[in-house]
Amino acid sequence: MKLLWRIAKEAKKYWGLLLVGIIATLLLTGLNLVAPRLLARMTGIVQQGIQNMNEILVLVAALLSLYLLRILFRFLSNYMCHKAAWNLVQELRMVVYNHIQSFSLAFFHKRQTGDLMSRVVNDTATFEQLYAHIIPETITNSVTLVGVIVILITINPTLALLTCIPVPFILASGWVFMKKVRPRFRVMQKSLAGLNSQLQDNLSGIKEIQAFGQQERESGRVLEKAGEFTKAMLSALRLSAVFHPSVEFITSLGTVIVVGFGGLLAFYGKLNAEEIVAFLLYLSLFYAPITGLAQLLENAQQALAGTERVLEIMDTASEVTDKPGAAELPPAKGYLSFEDVSFRYLDEAPVLENISFEIKPGQTLALVGPTGVGKTTIIQLVARFYDPKAGRITIDGRDLRDLTQNSLRNQISMVLQDTFLFNGTIAENIAYARPSASPQEIEDAAKTAGVYEDIMEMPDRFDTKTGERGIRLSGGQKQRISIARAVLRNAPILILDEATASVDTQTEAQIQSAIAKMRGSRTVIAIAHRLSTIRSADMILVLKDGRIIQRGTHDQLIEEAGVYRELYHAQEL
Image 1 (tube, helix red, strand yellow):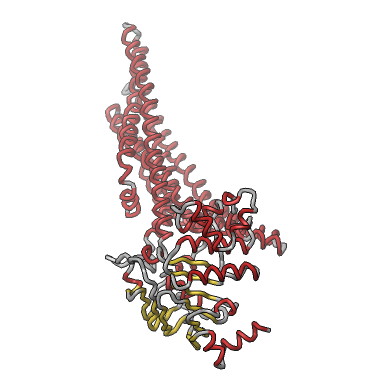
Image 2 (image 1 turned 180 degrees about the vertical axis):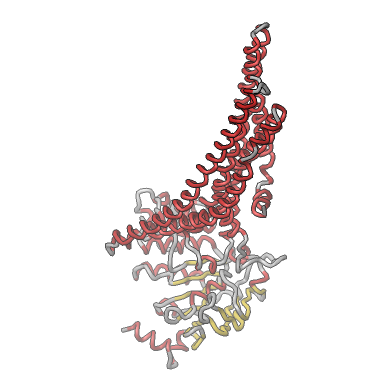
């Protein structure tokens, strides 16, 4: 009931559509209850001998009107409920997606992309079952059941009570089935997500799979995940295969009891032909909804298993959130300060310990050191993808945690080592940082990044499709497009994570020249393994084991014995 109440609150925007569908469903149910009575009346007239043809014509006209109205109400019932359901699914997909989009990067370290996709697409689709089928049909079956019982009691109370004998047994078996089958549907939904995750991983890494000749191995992994889903599905279906025939058998016993006792009453003249026909017609209407409710019970367990997975995501809080009343960051000068900052990922060893430094507006800071010493973590903390575990980070004297995430990130341009391009045109990817940019501004950014000439040699130039993750472009082209994107944003803080790692010497010189032109106008943080690219930095920090072991300019550090001088001379060889 708690789950159903949560779902009802999410669907309140579509209650109007659902209400129209339910009213139409109730009217349709009412018509279905009237039809057997009219047919029974026809039987009575025929048995007594037709005295007046007008009475037959009235019954025919009533039946025709009833069947025409059934078409209208069935349309309204089906379409309105489906419209409400699919609109709700669409909205929930956006709610879940937007919630996932708000999570900090720590959340994505623990989750697979395929699993999250399954929750957004597959698990939310179960709401359609709930609103378009389960709720309307449950109402229809319940009203039909009550209506038929009332009518049967008016015909013959004793026979009506005998009709109800199977109901407690069906309810008891339904309760046991519900308790047993939902956990199996949970496993099924989880295994479907696992299959999606494996497929997503394999399709993203298809080049590596083919390059290392691992097609057979990966096919085996997909088969294993597909087998887990099939096993979970069959486990649930096995219960269904026992439950549904059992319900049918119990209802059949009820029919046998009623027919036997009804025949006995007819033999002693306590039931006439009209009443027998009416009772038999309503008897099929009585047991059909019970059997239908059994099927709906199974569908409901599957829907609720998906609902639980959706609500699990919606109830998960992001580790990085805006404080109540967080301030918007005004146009920043670019004064950054780390004050005794420490950080660790989850329960792992500390990545940064007591890091302190400051960058004045317009200065360039370079971060140097072996892989895994915390360089990338520092830039992720600046963009507030994570919050420090201790200490604080300020921009223009204001703690990042007191600012809204959007207003902070709007003033940061980033060029990451792992370049990501969306499946669109080159122009769209460059303008991603500023969608309102004019074609001329896009071209100017491409020229600054040294990729303009490459683009102009392509058949469709700026309208060239990049392919998924930029697969149609070279590594150097992708990186320069990423730089053009950062240039176009024109933010006061520029972060460069190995920005020239995938380009040749000539292109590197062009990019370095472009970056040099921006010096003084914005604060730059650069991570570089190639030390020749950071010689002009205002401050170089050398990190080791999460601590700053050296700091100073290139000329200062090259004069003192230490890690920096060793690295620099090693690269000169």
